[in-house]
Image (cartoon, rainbow, N blue to C red; front, side, top):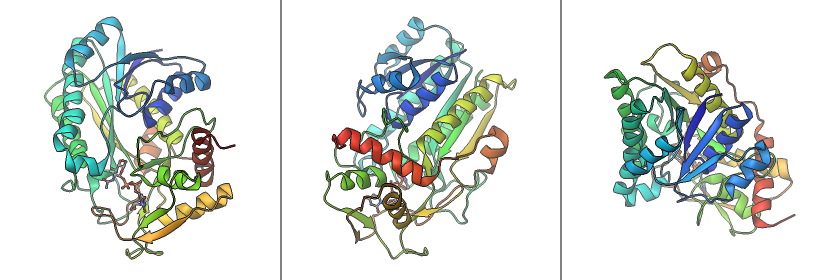
Length: 341
Ligand code: UD1
């Protein structure tokens, strides 16, 4: 089967996607600069899928590195572009880092794709492009709102860059995948999320608190206009999410349209509050989470969840891992990396 380049393939969503691509028979080449992951992830991928993917350590923002990769690994048919910086707060402090990492890398890929006969690119976008929705669940036709962080802006601009490039006649296709909130880990506990430093996202903070690495989880606000006052999100299991990439890649490579851009929401269609998620974790694992209610976090969206009908109907993909199972997998992974039994 076809050879696929996965940028950021040792990262959280990237590593789970590499496993699913290999399980589906694709040959994978990873490029990653290991800025937010480590080489040991390849062992986890190999243990699960039985195959060690080809790995190139390098930075996608460096055009020569990328050109070398295409020369040395001829025949790449598709790209999945995960390589990007993703911390919302940091992006406010270091906008240029975000614009450079997230956009120069994309420009380099789009520049080289025609030269090396790459037929399509799947792009990691985010529900952050919708801002605070006027209605929930939110579908793909909803307006794009002004981004509230440079991180969010890079996702919007990247979607536009890809769309404009294809509209101008570039000989490849693209599928833009708007992720809601990816959580969990592979059920084998061989791969999962590996945040560097203090986690900014809810689940790694929660599991680290349960493991005793952090003292207390702060719930950012319980005075929102939601049933229990905490924010609502659409938490999507990372393995479900990874599988959507395989389907998207097959669809893109099979499609006869040489100039298509499609966009899909990837979520469950169910909104869950932060407090409900904590309850789910406690119910699924039997472990109590030490948490307290704190002030709102600046820039947070009150509630957002996906209308995933387009992905369900057109991709034939549906999220099906139960949230309690997702929480059990997240906990199994946290125990493993914390050395707990
Ligand atoms: C953010 C980004 C999203 C990005 C994702 C991954 C926005 C609006 N969203 O999602 O695009 O893909 O990060 O980096 O830019 N929470 C707590 N305590 C904590 C941590 C989080 O209560 O210690 C709450 C937050 O207030 C929020 C929910 O948990 O209501 C989810 O937060 P988080 O995991 O950080 O994801 P988002 O902010 O939804």
